[in-house]
Image (tube, rainbow, N blue to C red; front, top):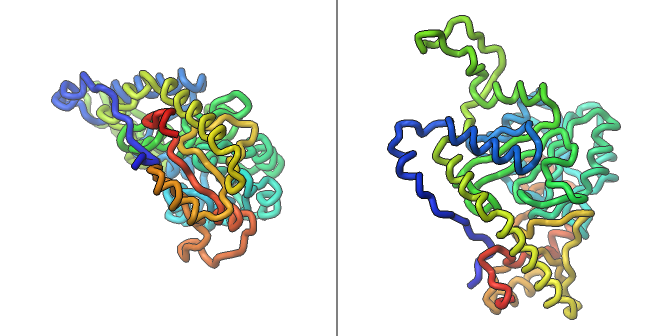
Length: 353
């Protein structure tokens, strides 16, 4: 069976040296990894974090989102993308989605805004870019921060620009095992504002300003005040080194996935029961190849019988009681009832499709 996901692990020639160096926590390799990310995105406001959850938590604290504040989000997302907001005591108001794309409907987002709305969480479902310019315009109109949730879209592009460099207030990425880039576990948070980055740097590291934290003897200085709440959320040297090595053939792997996507499109074009998931002015990383099927269960079974592990990937989170009373969202229902993901990764030989 060809898997839907597969972790990529490169050669790690220096790993043993790092493991026995006595310097396992955040350090040189963390800085090097962030420098590589900066160069990749051509964007200087990026911080690596210990997990995707802490990337979101750092964003929440940096934006001063408080208990009881409301955020607007799509229920078609991984629980890893939605639970951190509930854990922080924020109320999620679900917006509907465009059933042709699986991403937030700008019109539905606008209709959900009220005086308690403090942020819009824009998930780019399974690596397919959503209506970024339109959602950002709604946020700017109402003075509400927009967070691009890039849990599955590292390397995806929108109007030629990498997601993470599209003018959105905040972007978060996941580096968990099956993502396009993995550090085994980890994440990143990006800001389109230098002052927010400065604050986030403190929030990520227990509120500590490392430039003045220790005195001339290397002891903790009483002159260094801690005046913001924070997390122990830095990415270790070990994880960062793995992330650095991932970049060696990142673009080659993404290119392979886009080539596989073209093959899937060609292969399925004459099948009336399926149609490809649409991308909004975007070029997905094709973490998966998305299709909309007339009969979801039958489609999943058929592709599995053919040796491809097809899946619906996510379930709509508005069914969970932790988020309050379920409400009917017609776009979400239509999309959930038809979406199927097919293996499209770098490990899939084009001739297999």
